[in-house]
Length: 224
Image 1 (cartoon, rainbow, N blue to C red):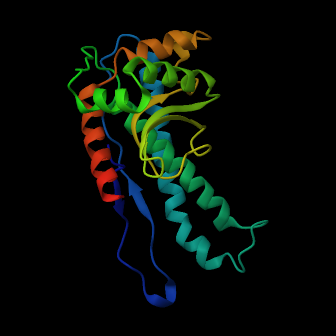
Image 2: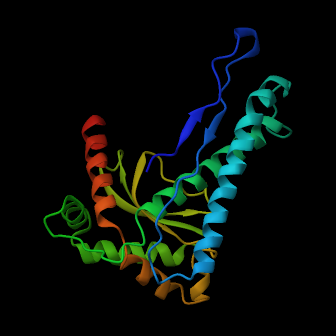
Image 3: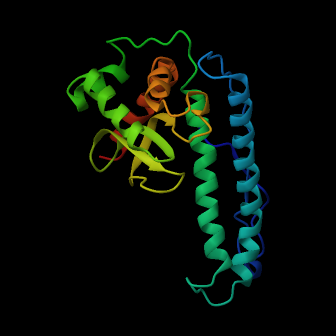
């Protein structure tokens, strides 16, 4: 699930600053679902690759912009704009990868003895209550993402939504379930967003999600 970033070079000379540029590598995901059309799957992959190209382009420009931006000025700064674009594109890549990995399981099944089931039941009162709350988060999202994550400050799992790719993200949260709520993801359903959400929930890959819950618990232990 981790964003495939690789350093683009060694540390530059001290008088030139530090080279912080990174390169994102695209990944391939099996979208076995028949709840989405071939056209939607193809378009979605093209959008994912577009974000990777955009992130790599911004990343390559950042070091030079920092060195030549003059006196830092929030009202007129190339470096500021690039940093904003960096976060937006980086999040878009990461969120797409999380979504692709935890979706399209046509044999989706969650077991009551799984860590994911037990933790969702514990923090939401019941698995059904988690699901109802998650659906509500998905349906109130304008364009963006519905997520479940572990928050190190709340010390529990909670649901939230991300507007576009970089707005309303809670600090200190590690995502374990991600659902794409952009229009390009649900284009086959037109205005029937609830049907899209229900279909996606029926094909969550709980094996992938279980591994994320295990990581989240390790994060919880380390953050005590």
